[in-house]
Amino acid sequence: QVQLVESGGGTVQPGGSLRLSCEASGTINSLFLLAWYRQVPGKERELVAEEISGNSPRYGNSAKGRFVISADFAKSVVYLQMSSLEVEDTAVYYCNAGTNYEGHYRYYWGQGTQVTVSS
Image 1 (cartoon, helix red, strand yellow):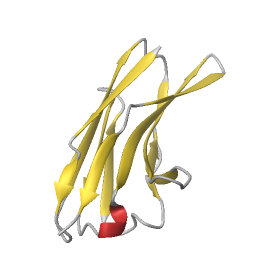
Image 2 (image 1 turned 90 degrees about the vertical axis):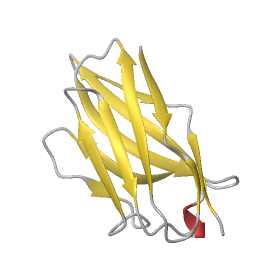
Image 3 (image 1 turned 180 degrees about the horizontal axis):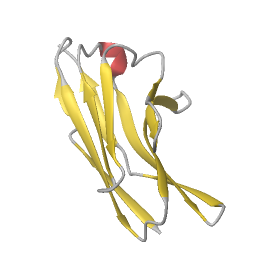
Image 4 (image 1 turned 90 degrees about the horizontal axis):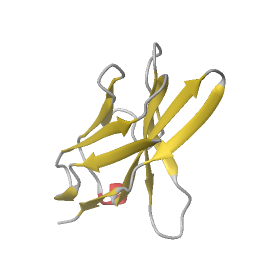
């Protein structure tokens, strides 16, 4: 099993910045994916950014040009640097990790961290 713990959420004014962190622990076999998603009440969870080991990061439309994902697969940590935050970025942000051990894919979620953008 893999446990994911997010941190770094909080309240920030529009135009501000936040850095989210996520650390994976437990029995981690062949970690290949680290990602961030977000969700607001009444809406589906949406991709913010993901990084697959050995590949370039991929961003959701809402994050392009403003957010940067940084994953360290050796240390099992992933960060999300968010800049130029907008009210619409208010959501619970979830860390997601994927492992592929002997062809068995498994995905894990953190408990989420609240990001509120408000003046």
